Amino acid sequence: EPEVTQTPSHQVTQMGQEVILRCVPISNHLYFYWYRQILGQKVEFLVSFYNNEISEKSEIFDDQFSVERPDGSNFTLKIRSTKLEDSAMYFCASIATGMNYGYTFGSGTRLTVV
Amino acid sequence: AQSVTQPDIHITVSEGASLELRCNYSYGATPYLFWYVQSPGQGLQLLLKYFSGDTLVQGIKGFEAEFKRSQSSFNLRKPSVHWSDAAEYFCAVGPPQGAQKLVFGQGTRLTINP
Image 1 (tube, each protein chain N blue to C red):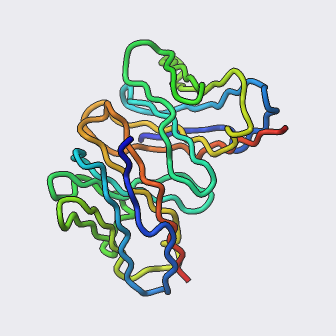
Image 2 (image 1 turned 180 degrees about the vertical axis):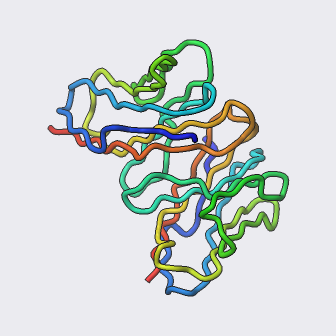
Image 3 (image 1 turned 90 degrees about the vertical axis):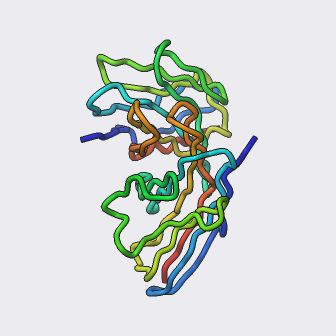
């Protein structure tokens, strides 16, 4: 079964450093998402991406965050200057088209900011 | 505003017992409804989904869920739980049109007693 692949599985970074989280969505999918889950809390939407541009973003997704699909396969989330409160599990997801297929989520990247 | 409520933060059941996890939603129209399961340190796996039609939907791992429009509920059930069902369960809703974001509940942590 096709999978959404996320790397790395765990990243530790110092506060103020830039991090890039990588995702390889399912190849024929057209819509891409990032969600995050702070430890013990609910999964929260960050941003959606379609046709090479952001289609929706949450209030969490401020100027410190950016997304990119640099080469037609990878989908990246960049945090320019990490804060302690950015520590969370970050999930990438993709869907083919519309909602009928349901999201396929990756296994997540656990980001720890120290 | 869109919201999902999972009233039970933590549920403990004995192996072989039946299970029901509650989910209530607040939405402008009938949304698409999902249940996801998250094993410790793992990603989100889709258990089942409801879009329309039969209000009782079957999912993987022996789970089912029933949509009740009058109660704005989408409760998850399993007739006999297994130790491997211990995990976090998330209910989520999404709009019926377009590939837009999901809104998640807080999650219910399921513990299985041997």
